[in-house]
Image (cartoon, each protein chain N blue to C red):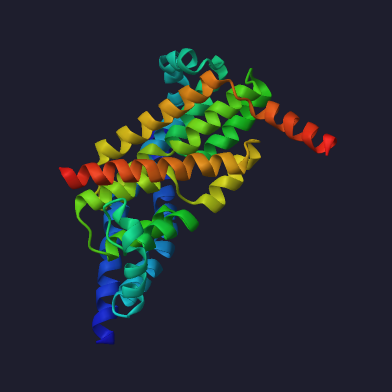
Length: 142
Length: 159
């Protein structure tokens, strides 16, 4: 039966995806947890607090945004779970990252479709920044 | 001290992996069923109205849906295939790519963030709405990537 075959294939893909995720999420989680006990996290926090205040996020959130944009969403998710954040803060980060993530890999894909890299990155980062400011400030009011 | 940190890291990452895994499995099975039963092909007629909003060809709807649901890499493959087989102009290609870079793999991405505490309705709503607005604006501005390439080339010649 086709349905059983679909479920089996889907299950195997689930294992593959979870394994692939684990290889990223676990090291990132460990790294961020270790960082939390070193002065490094305080340096990062103090450097990025003014910038992150735009989005109503704590300074540590910069780590999540950088990981998500340079690596991928899974690395960002590993870091989100390692840093304690409010649901509103996670939502702001999620909105920003959903517009702009895995820039290295995905831009290579869009280049294949013949769209200029500059334009793609401009649209994605632009939307991330604008939506981050709007939702972050709105969330602060609510 | 070091043992405590490692313990926190290992337990915490195991917990994160669990909350991700219970979302990934149903998604992968669901997406596989969508794919195997060609459900997207069947429902792409329901999304015909998109062609009117963005003024794109009807052959563009299927690759757009594939990208929105399955992700940009898979979507790109289908877009390239569809543009060989069907009637997709470079303008259509530009507009669906713009839509897809802002809004793709919506099921997986949204649920993964919900697993770590985000508000999914808010997240998905803003993402889809922004993609529609930006694609709509660009579709009315009539910018085509090809025209720009030609412009750039002529600039080079003049220089």
